[in-house]
Length: 149
View 1 (cartoon, rainbow, N blue to C red):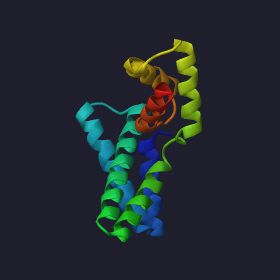
View 2: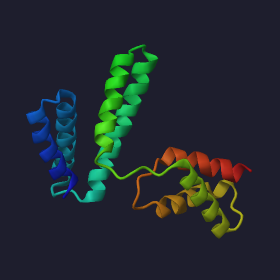
View 3: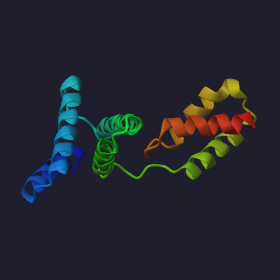
């Protein structure tokens, strides 16, 4: 079952159980998926659906940070709840320990790369996680740390 069809069935379920925040979040997700599909002019594949959801999660994280800095904890909490609903449709994110292990193995395979080779190392590490969900910022930090010493 595709993410889009799961979202649609969960919208109906949320309407029946009157879960307002979940319903509004799922409607927003459905709209984002539909907009991407319209832009592409053909149905989305699973990877593209996951990219849309990852973008939505990143937007919610940024908004939560802004609300926290703006002394609006109730709005930040709402954004975090929305993130939890959206993450339910994605595979589990890769942890820092797995990222660090992948970085070390790529560096070992490449020999002794320098900071100039950071782009190549990043590309190879991201390729190892092609099927999973990984945060590029965490990978970048791990690569910098490993190459720096």
